Length: 181
Image (cartoon, rainbow, N blue to C red; front, top):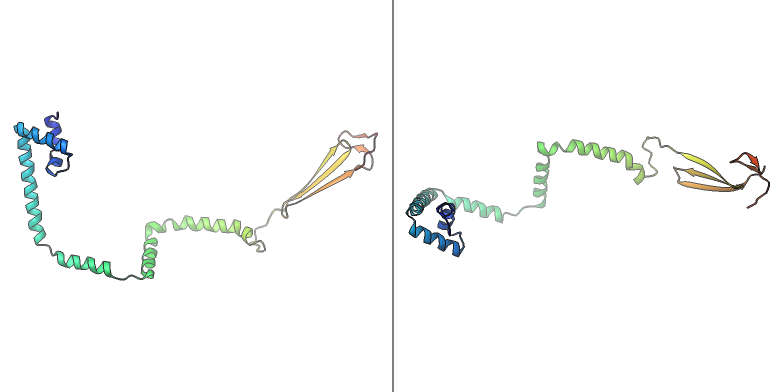
């Protein structure tokens, strides 16, 4: 059962026919038995009637025919693709959108400087590259291995060699056995 406060909250929706059938019937039954809510209903109906009369009187003085002809003309008007493109360009070059162009230009410039050699390997941009090569020597029980890694050409060379003097490089002692590969 709805109370008077609940009825007053949904009274406008009831007048507009927006309530479910069961809720609308409950509001109608309450309004039939409650004089204060019935008075609220009469005031809202009077306000609704006054607004409708005002809008109807004002709408007769407005020339809708020219408005609808303009709408129809714009709907039927054939637009070329370049008109849409020019509109898009005009929208992009307004001040709020231009604010983004500076950081975007900086990012594109930086990306271009650092990645142009990746896309065009023969092109030198003037930025010197570090060509790093490292040789590592490993002594493994008389069998020696040397590894050369070179960064620019991504080359790795592995040498397997036998120490001619028979020295064990890791301990500094002479080796008793001679090993061969």
